[in-house]
Length: 309
View (cartoon, helix red, strand yellow):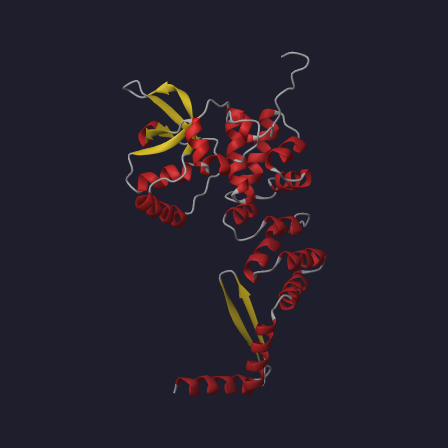
């Protein structure tokens, strides 16, 4: 490399990685532009000659989304070509095999739609470039769960010696976002499982991260359907005993209730003459009716029996 030649850097623009003109394009723009596709030479490749990238950042693909995409492809075909790179190994008949750089979901959906071939844009890319493009594409489309995103950033930093600033520039995020996401990976496996299946968000995890009882707090957040703000309040109360934490969770939930929920509570309470608490969670909700005497309980039972009649 000559003294005047600038070294390649992470995030130098996907147009450079893809061999496009110096005007920068995102991976989505390259895939969606008919002109870019025709100039780049999209080829139709048998699906059996294509294999997924084992380093693909995205590990979880929702079956319902895949089914919907498959139905669309069966009706309209593959509108956007996938991006692949040639592999050194070949098929038994000597045909070149390819690895997916971007578009694995389309490739899987095409097979479900019983397509035997798929349009693909072929590029010679290094492992590092392949990982970078995969991360950028998925982050831009918000396809990664927090754990997948964090692991992808960590891989770019540790395997390829990039700084957090360089990774941030590549994915158009702030350096603090990269640092916060990578920090999530230090949390217990139970918390990572909650993040992966969407029961809590990265914001929830950060809110309770410094607590010595982080798993217990996470369960309360999930069970109560707490917001991030309520999770922060819960974490602050963590120095108290268990009952205090439970009270804090309920108080935080109450403060988050909308006007309709509070109005409904008032209406039911007025009819029963008892305190009523309605709580919503991600998996449903519950109505709590509080009574102090057996006579009050009997009255509620009579009212319910009358409703059945």
